[in-house]
Amino acid sequence: MAEAMQQRGQLRISERRLLLRLGDAACNFLAVLIALRIWAGFSNLYTFDAGFVLNNIGWFFLLQSLWFLLASANDFYDLRLTASTFGSATRLLQITLQMLIVYLLIFFLSPREALPRLFILYYGVGSFVLISLWRTWRPFLIGWTHQPRRAIVAGSGWAARQMMQVLELEATQEYTVVGVITEEDKPLGTGRLLPVKQSRESVLQFAASVRASEIILAYESRMSGQVFQQIVDAYEQGYTIVPMPILFEQITGRVPIEYVGQEYWNVVLPIQNHNLFSPNPVVKRLLDVVLALTGSVLFAGLLPWIALAIYLDSPGPIFFRQERVGRGGRPFYILKLRTMVPDAEKLSGPVWASERDPRITRIGRFLRKTRLDELPQLINVLRGEMSLVGPRPERPHFVEQLSAQIPFYRTRHIIKPGVTGWAQVRYGYGNSVEDALIKLQYDLYYIRHQNLTLDVLILLRTVGKVLKLAGN
Image (cartoon, rainbow, N blue to C red; front, side):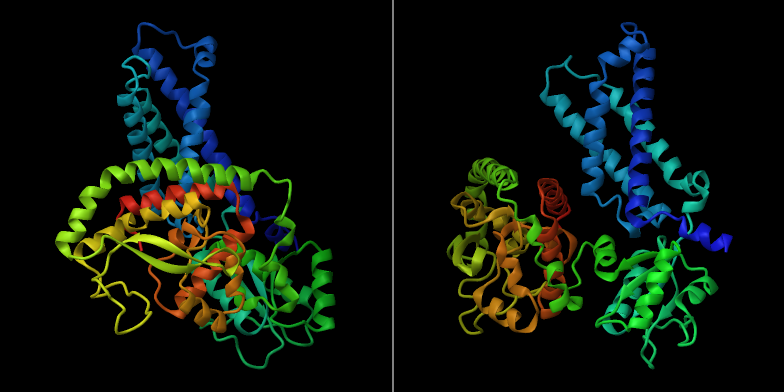
């Protein structure tokens, strides 16, 4: 019993992520302090004391903010990444190098004596070493949190199978499924032999026998009154009870729309987020206009060279207009740089582009990888037809087709479409109904959780994909 209570004392996913962030923040703080100490030690102008630290206190906030911005943009708190020591170290090195590059850019654009030269190098080395030690040794520093949470999946059908698959593929360090509570005669078909609660056995007895700390509810229909009461008993005894949609979102950044029915429609339409007095829409629109104007000026300088390359590679128009479905289901026309041969759909009609589509020109492939072909849509942003961040607008033909096959597909039209979006930075190239379903799950997650911080994160990840030539 004492062992079971210790298991129930483990941290949840959100708490573990918070703990990681707090540890990273402490390491960054110490790294700045060490960098200041070394900087003062090598200089004849400064003495490392409380006054010197207070005079340079801005570095603590500036470098901390920039580091967390880059860490978020590089998925440094992704559960699959944190489960790998090598993966975490590689990503940490990438973040550190990006910090140095950003600093160097600012350094060369600033007056010569405005910024210290080697201070950022001391900080970079210090933060890399300290965070590496923290990430490597944290299981020993916080002994009881390093073990995965021992979970029971209570449910049947798609929801239970999908939840178990997500836990096994994307949260191996956070969760271990140790048992199943199901009222079906057939097994869940997950490929693992797991203890299954017998009908005569209470949930409390079963949870104690497998030493579980958490019960994940993944029922596609109503559970029986007997099982419900037993789960309530387990909750009263200190076991954590988590609904499948909530845990699925926390782990994957997607909404499990296959699980959503009439009883769970609020998972897709969170009406409490519609606040008439929220400043977010005004700030978001202001951000759209400022960035779209800035981007348009930069694009105007690149356009003559891009236009020449497009024409030399495949004579024809430089731009093309295409009808898309916007907010509220209203059609509008987007502007794009042409990346396919002229009249690419003259004979076939509307079809999805494939990753190695022969209709895409050589320069068109490069434009798609760098997403330069989407830049003319900044005009759509200035017109108010689109936002910089939001679900990508789809063509009417495919909207009709996908709406008939995918539940809640039209829900993505309750906000403005975007030049980039959560689905674009989290998922690869898509050209099928299955891909559209997964992207819709990401879009609905964005709709449920949209805020300015998430928008900035998506824009940063988009820049990262462009630099890696990973656009789609």
